Image (cartoon, rainbow over the protein chains, first blue to last red):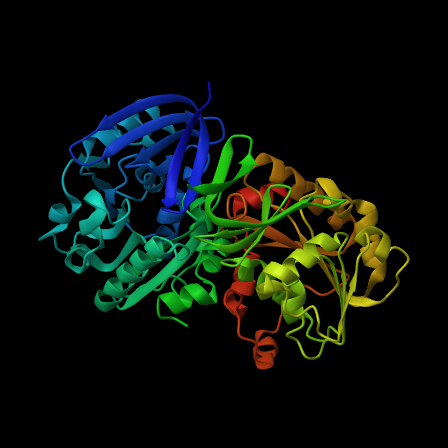
Length: 282
Length: 282
């Protein structure tokens, strides 16, 4: 008997991985959550049929969503993670000893519970005393908050289902208000390659550009996401991801990373022409 | 009826694309060559069941295999392309008016004939008067040639089947001899992500480092290759891919590109830590 998990990356493209065991499956109030043990990628979490986390390459996603902003502003003390129920982003953030407060707002407790049970590699730092987990809608959580967070990380699913509101202008405006003067917003910014992802990439980028004076995007190689070519957005009230980046200062912190490094920090902002054209930077 | 082409990227990972029509299929003396018309990627050429070229993303591969070296040495006059039977590399090389001679050595005429019939997007410049096509083994072709080429591009399949010899030390030594003093060798250098590809990446890199004083690697996002994270090697007798790179000089040539640009040139050499560790640069 062979068991395969197949993801429809587009209606005409499929990505399949051979499964040892289907470990977890639950339809929550918000979405379908599954965890597989696979031969190639170790444990894999899928939400609504899309791979979110694999043990083999989660380090790429979680390092890149965290360290770029932290290297630009090592003065960061207060962090809000919206989404990210697997805990991987909190794990990376919690490695900075100077950070005093990490709020994580995940709408779906099922995701967190499943990660705690099956994905210790990502969920291992949710018990850190600086971490508070809120099972709420991130959209509502951030409303009315003023000048509180130095860093907001939007670690969301695609803008279909519960992640949809996290791609709206109103939400980005609330994030702007919730950020401190040196605040940075990092958001999961989709991918330029397949039309559906590229449309969402463009839409998110356009809205953020209207609200933040600094709004850039950077790329990373994420093999288990469609096309492998994904972006994060970097927006701020003033700090620039390259001009205000001090590699020596970050290196002094002494974190070991498997993907991120100071050279790659700069390199990640060097986007291909077709991507620059899509987001109006050609 | 639905027709799908499925590639076994590893024994536990499959990538599938929906096919409009199977346009061409031939077992040559060297390999199995197929061309499909697909919904997502346009026309696709597969060799021995591995995607080589798709109309949707071939520009990434062919721009990156060509322009990095050309931007480091715009004095290049004489180019040898080994493999590359689809013609895409020759197309990019031929865009430089200063280039006087382009030799292409492809072992398998079936690939070239199929590309001419079905893939005009890549094969369109094979008739350029500066181009000579040799249907020979690249390994033999380069033997005994001395101080002839300013640029050798090894546009090979994976090191299984007819591409195998193009990953050997003897071959790289012959390339070194065939290159002029400012000569550059660019080679298809596999991928760091899946074990099989990573092994070949490491082996090729180690051999080239023993022969060339400058031996670097640079990465690109190639969605239809396994993992989407691929590398080219850049080796030379003296020219350094970053220290000897003059962006203004390249930009003056005035080529329009869809992927490559001067910033990305630098960014492409900024490798993730896990890749640097694999090729001994950590």
